[in-house]
Image (cartoon, rainbow, N blue to C red; front, side, top):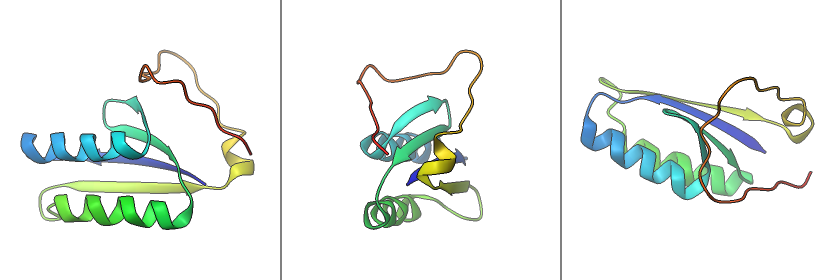
Length: 91
């Protein structure tokens, strides 16, 4: 499953922790948006780690879970931020 995570974090310290955690599970596509190809248990692990960092009264975090068939129909246009790591996905 593809999970697209987007966040708006008020504290620079928490912002850095969220980004670091997301990098452990996926690829940054924009400054506050990550793509993560994860099975459900691994997604639950990521969400648990992020939930421990986020302060709901100050921050926001959203994850869109997209099935493999819909993920293949994703369209992009323009410059995307990508890490140096090679990423490939098999559906």
